[in-house]
Image 1: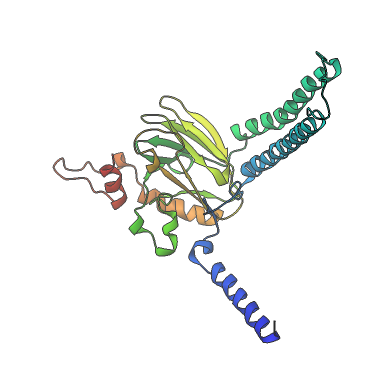
Image 2: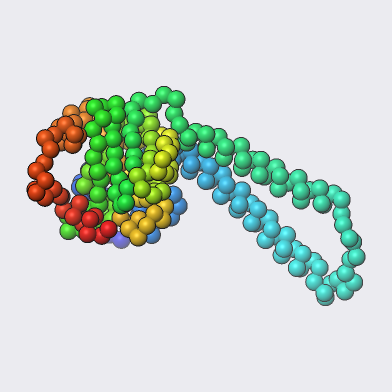
Length: 297
């Protein structure tokens, strides 16, 4: 390759990198969403997902070692004890050392898996030092969020139609929503889940949070985002014909920006009982997203 060709190649690669870095999707920070042809778990956006990823790697390598060992043992048995070289098979009925080994070794493997597994379960369960609390209610088929620590305002979150998304974000169809759940970066967010009608599931993979929303019960979990971005999820409980119509979008922003958003949200999502009662004959106003949700009920 000539020097001029090499320079042009490097310039093209640099231009591609700059174009990607300047794209609107990445300009908002990390995007926690499924990727086409993606392999493995989603990139971690917080400490819970990092713990999940670490545990997943531990179990994966244990499985790899067991698989390789069984494969080698099987190949050795087939080769060593084939009929051509072993015309008279052994009549050994049992081997005490071998039986003890194949009982003790699996138990030890399970202990190695169980200890970090239980630690992870308790780590995900709740946080003793919550900075804010958010109530999440699953409904057929959308989400309702309440901020009790910030005036107790609440709002509904519906999915966006494909034509409401800019062209560069069409791949987020069925993930993007009209009203995102906004949290501050670095804050331990206590999440209280409840169900309004049937059992739903609040699931955001990049933040490592998953909790059922059960009618008549309040369940607790928590999450924390250590970087700015939008983290997408969906209801992963088959809660009805439109269960796929319940995407989740959690936007993590700097604390100062979060306080600004809260101040605006208190006015925007003023509680209905604080407003004058509407005239009975008047039809309620609906956003495009709400009309879509109602049409698909």
